[in-house]
Image 1 (cartoon, rainbow, N blue to C red):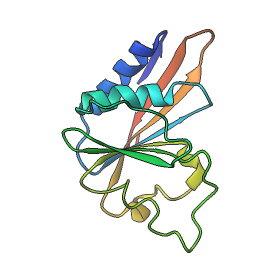
Image 2 (image 1 turned 45 degrees about the vertical axis):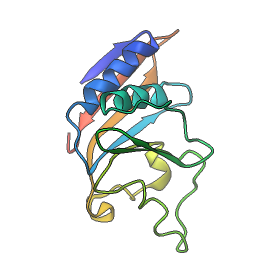
Image 3 (image 1 turned 180 degrees about the vertical axis):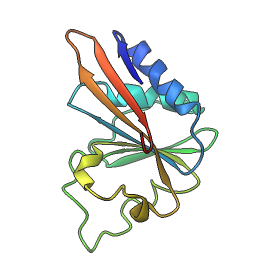
Length: 146
């Protein structure tokens, strides 16, 4: 599915649509260049999942956990260059079977989102956002395996 949006509210609505079918243990991988609306999409998803507090980019903190119908994790791996052997559990608190997780810049951990590496969580969708001129964004959503 590909959608075009021309405003933040429209991008948030796409995020809400994605979140409406998510359950605990689901992970959504969100890719796109800087300023393409990744956090805006996640904000809409969080609202759909019952999060009422402000949803902000975790660029400088790796991740945020929010309370909604279930715990919601929001990770931004932009500044992470990989996981060293001394950090095997770095993402465990965020990628937990009791939460829904959104991961921006997942390519920064190539291979970490393969089925066997995730354990008790699964990639439910992959989302790519692209600038399409002015305020227009093109959002491509692929279900897991699609």
